[in-house]
Image 1 (cartoon, rainbow, N blue to C red):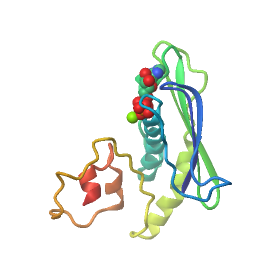
Image 2 (tube, helix red, strand yellow):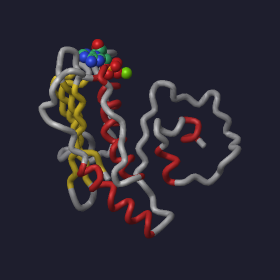
Image 3 (cartoon, rainbow, N blue to C red):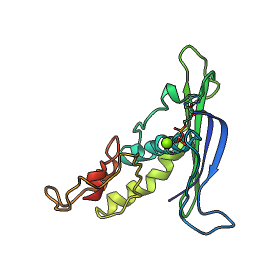
Image 4 (cartoon, protein in one colour):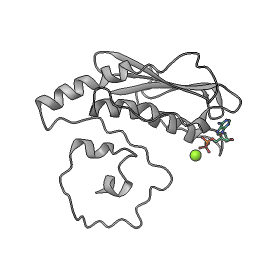
Length: 179
Ligand SMILES: Nc1ncnc2c1ncn2[C@@H]1O[C@H](COP(=O)(O)OP(=O)(O)O)[C@@H](O)[C@H]1O
Ligand SMILES: [Mg+2]
């Protein structure tokens, strides 16, 4: 699975922003680094990716599962609605889904379209049904609280994890990730 791009319309400080992710036609790397001054919108982009991918994760769990909505505070000031549009792919197909959030008292111009998030999740659910050991794509977002100072390297407790332990509702803690 690969995320090709994310597009934000009236999210945070952005009216319209498209961020293509690695790899690109002219660069075969698989790492994307986002660099910018404070307040330039890096966290906004990562948070939007988290929101968009939470729907994929929810639909891995359940065919009709719900991911996270866009927070009203993330709709660009003065705008009626904000939209996050994700373009992903696997070996066979392209998948696009969008999440819309409309401010209270405003009329929506369109609606969220999540059917292709379900479509991307379906083959993984099929594989997991057929084989308990199937690997799932691991989707993680760690904020600035990620640090290892106070994490013991001596592991205690649960040593064998289920694939879905990587996808706890608010994300697995960094401590659990480290474990
Ligand atoms: N709803 C909003 N409408 C307009 N601007 C916003 C909104 N929410 C956040 N911002 C602006 O976005 C910027 C913060 O972006 P952020 O993603 O936190 O930047 P970075 O992570 O690069 O420091 C600030 O300048 C803030 O004023
Ligand atoms: Mg930030």
